[in-house]
Length: 267
Length: 279
Ligand SMILES: Nc1ncnc2c1ncn2[C@@H]1O[C@H](COP(=O)(O)OP(=O)(O)O)[C@@H](O)[C@H]1O
Ligand SMILES: [Mg+2]
Image 1 (cartoon, rainbow over the protein chains, first blue to last red):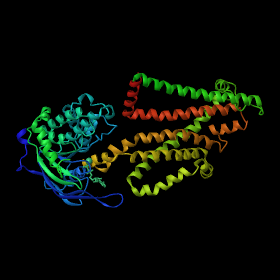
Image 2: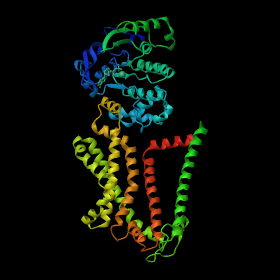
Image 3: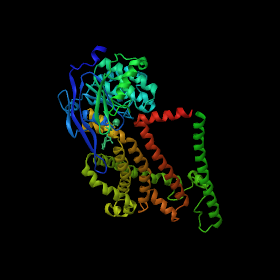
Image 4: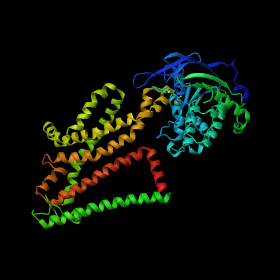
């Protein structure tokens, strides 16, 4: 696994972010620049993090990839196509900060929802949901309702739902930021395990440096204000990653390197 | 923890008991006062036990029928019309809410009418509708339908509008079609709101139907109510109808809750969780 996921500049470009700027209007009608000429590429199969303090434009950038937002200038291309084309081909999976589960559906039915929409047969979506439940360790809770689960379990359902459709590209917006440290560390390992199995591209938004270093091949560091790409840092820790790597000197060096790459030096 | 929850639950029951007892005591105080003043040929405010007793009294009070017989015979007419009106109002209200959600234009056109319905005392329109239809039965249905329609439409619409943006974005990311968005997200989300509307509307439809009865002498609970008040028959008919309608009103509301539990498994789960907590 470590070879296939290690950063390799000759790899296929999957997502090209070409000079993307996004300008919002605030409620007084003034321009607010959320992204300023962001330009970089995301490679096929890599785990890339968009890292930066809150308000620096991470969500905005993710939304331009997901076709939830048009850039004011510049463009995004995914496998040479527009995000809209890719979305209509149902190749995106999204995980939000909150789990966004449908309260009236059981855990299993929530995982089946996108499969139903994509026209899978009842049996196929049921089988796929069972498989995903197994992977995220929620088989016992298949017939529970979301409100009967803890926050961490709910987030796992959201991840199972996103991976269940086997998306080419998985977009995750601070999926673990509302969780406690113990749950978070466990979900980090779960997420990496699933990713190593499926080898899909993951774009992971976070404001947590350790989280970004632990999970990613590469980290895009965004700096405020306005949202500029200040560095792209390679993380040369091998996969599969283990919790004790967090305590190694190299991990600490990487964390410092990322921290120092923020515009204006240390935060 | 368990103990604390049980305490709150039992104190809730306690509040309820105190509340009911309070009403009964106040009632009885007034009943005794009225008995003491005795200006009318018959006691207009009987004691509670007298009202309960009158339900079981086989003595005919009018047309050879006992109190209970009069209530039940007339209830059939009134309640079946209330039920039909309720059903029509529910269907129209629900469909209108969906249409308002589907189309900005429909919403813009319908919104002022919804406001208007809220402002006009609908029961004041009852004589006009009766004059137009010349039929007390249809008038009952129409008034019950109008009164049902408003809470159902507004609550359902509120439910449709309550869906969080992230859910839309999730379905958007799957390139879901509009029908999918409605059937898999919007309609399931508005069901609890829809039932809130039904719970408000059901007793209103019954009350409306009874009040429409009073416009004509052709029978129905309201008709008997006004005759009894005018001393054309025993005052116990009036009180029995009041008690009966109150009970039916509460039952109609709980019937809606029961149907909701039946069709929504989520409700069953929530109830089970509550029970578990209590035990
Ligand atoms: N819809 C919007 N309208 C106006 N301003 C917005 C909107 N969305 C984001 N912004 C602004 O753009 C900037 C970047 O926001 P965001 O991408 O959400 O940051 P992050 O996800 O890094 O916390 C912030 O200053 C925010 O206030
Ligand atoms: Mg954000």
